[in-house]
Amino acid sequence: MEKQIDKIKGIIYGQAIGDALGLGTEGMTDEDMAWKYPNGIRHYSEIFQDRHRKRWKIGDWTDDTDMMLCIANAVIKDRGVNLTSIAKKFKEWADGEPMGIGENTYKVLMIGDYVEKPLEVSKKVWEMSNRQAAANGGLMRTSIVGLFPKAVEECAANICRLTHYDPRCVGSCVIASQLIHSLVYDNKGLTYHQMIDIAQRYDERIREFIDLSMNTDIRALELQDDDSVGYTLRTLAAGLWAYWNASSFEEGLLAVVLAGGDADTNAAVACAILGAKYGYSSIPQEYVEGLIYKEQLDEVVNGMIGLIK
Ligand SMILES: [Mg+2]
Image (cartoon, helix red, strand yellow):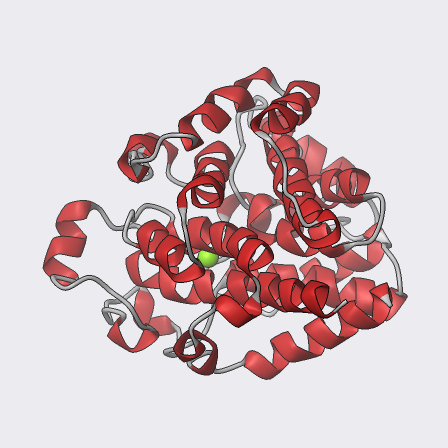
């Protein structure tokens, strides 16, 4: 149990740390980073304070972790998964005019009868995009689902669909959540073939990005590609890249952050996975200490442990 608790804490903190440090390079290219971070970036206090970034306090996280906490708090309160409660939490959060809310998420949550029929609304918005919209807004918050003791696939799929209906989004969430679940509960993770099996059940376009994640050089993932920043499969590839390649939490964190693009989301996903792989005890304390709202994370850690025991 002690080892499991270390992993559970590692996932929740990992997500928040990746998100908070990743904000520092969100939307940046190599050229931007060479200018703004000539010596790289290692801590929240170094985040370049431009118009986008200075809206957040140093050591705050963004929408990715906010929405992960919406799911966690709903599940803890209900002592189980109730999609309507989660949808309600999403809606309350969106009505509070949060910073950095994703375009697709905003569109879905702002439709009048969202809370009454979230899946229908979400599906309609996706259909109105000609079934093209496949942003990483479901994937960015799915780590917590990996902690559920059972029905992980079903829960990851349905919670994703609350805002992101595309099968590429759903498949991304199932792969990331199952990977985390296996690391926590079976202490082993998924093999390449297990990931491909899941991918094939949802959408054949996922496979290419699992293959991409196997590259040792993170640049092969083209995370700064203008046309696909924020695409669920790019972010999935970043998370899996860290899983295959990073030999420590910190190494993976810094590599994904310095790869730019949608760095807060990429690092939130990658670092939740690394937290599950290496545990909270492997995370350098400075990253933990620098999070200004970390008592919210502790509450959720305790709440989730309470559900599992
Ligand atoms: Mg974000």
